[in-house]
Every structure is written in C-alpha cells, then in structure tokens.
Image 1 (cartoon, rainbow, N blue to C red):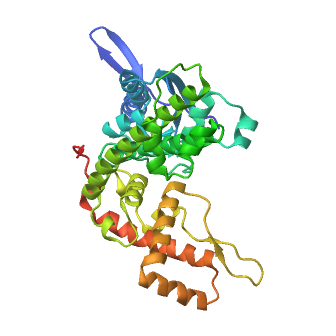
Image 2: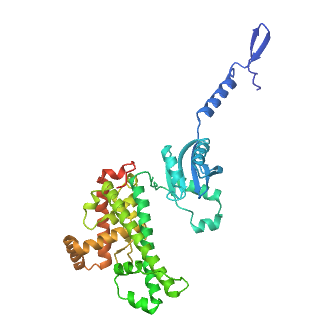
Image 3: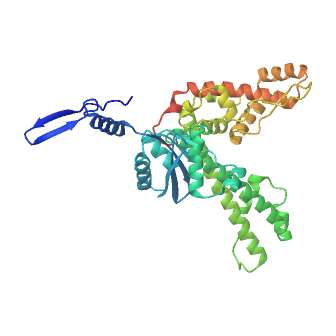
Length: 394
C-alpha cells in the first residue's frame, strides 16, 4: 500500500506564500554552525624535526599520525631561528621538536627553542641501513628526525649549555688542545735533535725535559740562517719558546678551571680519587641541566659503566660497556685507579673481590659502577651545578 506524502506547512507572509517540511525546518543551518565551530576549535598537534648544518637548518613538520606536512630551509642565524619557530607554529600546536646535533651545529637552535618553551629532544643521525634504503637528503633527514620523536626513539633531553658547565667545557677543551700541542712540540724537538749537528747534539744530550727546554730557548741564533747549524738552532729555540708559552697557558687555564669546579661542585672534590681534572669532565658530562638525568643508573649508562650481560650457557658474567661518554668513562677510570693506589677501603674491597674469584677487569668494572653511584649523589647535592648564571673567571 502506497504511503501518503508528508504534509507540508504553508506560511503566509506579506511577500507571498512559502511551504517547508515541518520536521526538517532549520536543520541545514544548525549543521553548518556545528561544522564552523568544530573548525574553529580543532587545532591539530604537530611534531617537528630539524637537520642542522653550519650555515642552514632544514625543518620538517609531520602530524601525530605520521603524515608529512611540509619542510623548509632556514639560515642558521638568530633571525632564522625566529622564522623557523613561527613557521612551525603556523601548522598547529607544537608537541616537540627533534634536533640533530644539539651539541654542535644545532646548539644555538636548541637554546632558542628551549627559551621559547618548546620541548627539544636529541636525535641521532639515521643509521647506514636506513640511509641506504631510503636515500640521503636534508628533507629526508629532517622528516626522519620528526619520525624518531613520534616513534619515541628520541627521548634524550639535550644539554642546554647556558651555565657554568658550558664555561668549564670550553676552557677544558682549550686546555686539552694546549696539552696536545705541547706534547707534539716536545716530540718534534727531541726528533730534531737526532739529526742535529754533532756538537749541538752532544751539548744537549742527556738533559731532563725542563733543562732541555731552557737550554734550547737560550741557544745563540746569531748568524746566517742558510748555515744548517744556525737553522737547527733557530728551530730548536722556536720550539722551546712555543713549549714555554703553551705551559704558561695550561697553568693559567688550570687555575681558572679549578676555581670554576670548586664553585660548581664542591662536594665532588671531597671524594677520594677525584681531582679537578676528573671533576671538570664529570661536570661537563652532566651539563647545566642535571635534572635530565633522573636516576643514578642513567648516569652510569651515560658514563659507560653500566654492567652489560655477557652470559652464555653455564657462564654467568657481565662485561664493561663500550657505549656512553668515553671521556666520562676515562675520568671514572682515573678515579678508580687512584683509589686502588691510595685508598685503604678500595684496596680492601679489591682483596675481598679477588677472593671471590673475580678478575681484575671485573673488579675494576664493579668499582667504576660504585664510583658512578657515589659521584651522581655528590653532583645532585651540589646546588651550584644547576645555576644558570655565568660566573666570573678567577
């Protein structure tokens, strides 16, 4: 049986007569208003990725569903950082930004984003297999950085480099370069003596390092440089003066670094076996934001002293870690060796562990792990480590 058509409502106005369905009256207008309101309140969340270089940075944007949105290149300048941040914010609410090279080319960008309140995560460069499969370009690397943040492969908080730790780092790096240059200088001087004229070689043979440097600095260099002996005298005197200059630089840097270390982590210097050089390296490893390292186990892994299982079959053992910050690992190694020589408690510990059939490598591994726990507590209790004020060098 056929259904009757739906009744229509007729409305009479001054301009004429209109009819409409009484059930759906006003429905289209209501739907449009909901859609407009949804568009107004719906702000998507995005994730950024940056591939950093010395002159330019390439940024990319993806959604939280992994869809690629856009990428663009910016200059590695303060104006470029501001333009990049504004560009990223134009696509939605910025969740986090993954940056490659936060401690090298991306250091300035990392500080700018952190100051702006943006969450920055450190991204390792893609492995060789991924680059071989997907290719290599700045946009691809930028998208890969964003993908690493979204997939939670990048979870490390970078060091800020805005406080006393950064000052210690640059001075410590300068000192290390001066020490290396001084070593190269004395080696060059000794090698040059091997082929020096016989009289000059016999005159300088058998002298200690300090006496040799002084004697070479006081050599008579008057004469024609075309004469081989005069040329050798000039070269030896120049090397000796360079050695003395580098030594004075190292001494001045040691004094400044020592004062900064005592200011940054006074509790650390009270530990047996921890000198200024070791303490300086450990402060550099932690950085100006030690709160990024939440546990002492994390600090041990950062220093490369976390135990790594190496068991097989009936053998149950651990081995030394080959990862982490190798300079921090070296600092802990020096502290452990110093304690084994001079600390009675450490010597007793070694004897007890040796009676348990542990090898010297295993004993050293356990000792470095214990040192990491002790040093982490000392670093966290030093209130000056977290200050962001730039100190005045002493």
